[in-house]
Image 1 (spheres, rainbow, N blue to C red):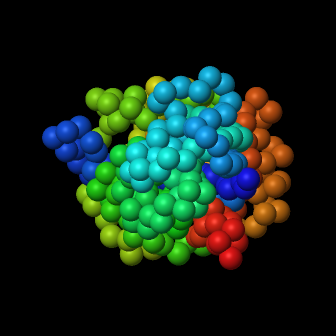
Image 2 (cartoon, helix red, strand yellow):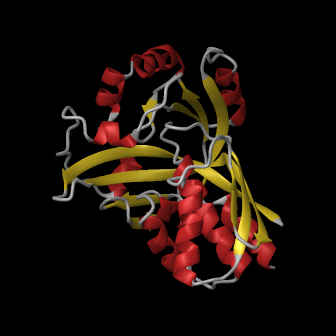
Length: 276
């Protein structure tokens, strides 16, 4: 038996540049991995046994990822998989996608199926647009529907992440008629020099007054940004001490945590240790 982390992420920007005929959105985004997330344990078993908080659903990303790898590899093995959830749901932190990626990499190791990261990312893309970035395990710039990934080296700053008492489904935001879908594409160099915004912010703030309130309340400590299409907002700090001081001032009615930005996923570091 072994355990692996499923780190969450922040979107440092999210530009919607178009919409495909199949309804998927063309986008540009920068993913920053965090040293905070879920934990998943793995052990050999005769069948697939999924243990996660609440009722295990057929559409659970943990279950779907396990079944996808089982089918792709043709293995006769099973596994006991236990998810310990820390990442808020509907928060824009990619918790479900990260869980799926950790299951793919964890079972690839447990079952010795021998798939490359590229092959696992292809399997993951069918589960969700964000899964490949967690499979590759690098902070990254993503384009297309999220499948065109370029690794980034980003400053490993500190983030206070706040979820203001609501959960948001990605589909609700992407289907909203008020969402603009015509942002001009930018280069990675321009993003690194000047940053960029989140095209979903105005829609989220309109639909969810709790998020608008968080922007207003937290704005006294610095620029507030929305991550992805979820409910979490964040502030950026140069040091852990600065972030910790603001974290203490976050209203107790909201969930909040302090995390450091990473360029390399702790999932990959842990797998390297297991394989050594």
